[in-house]
Length: 101
Image 1 (cartoon, rainbow, N blue to C red):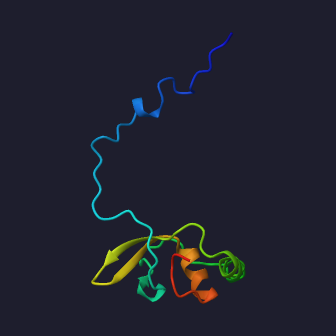
Image 2: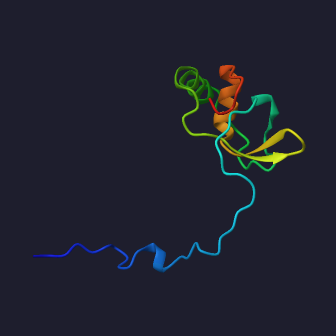
Image 3: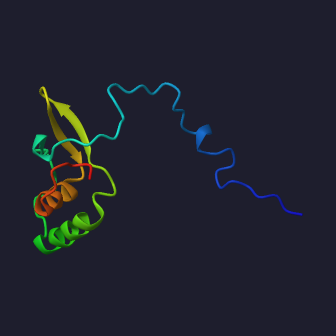
């Protein structure tokens, strides 16, 4: 009879402790108006294939945004994009009013 072992033996928790990690702010999923979202000026991607964006926009029209955008608060009511630039651009092409579909 063989015993099944984890690949790292004691598991990832024995290598990386998350006990001292503290975050500030909120980790929530909210729907916000897409016009309150500003793109990140430090976005490394500068080229977005228009045909691929249109395909994603068609999917978003049909299903909504499945994976939410990641945003950070800026100013009074604004939010800046951290991740999800393609989804944000495709949501604009699709004509969505809200970023969280």
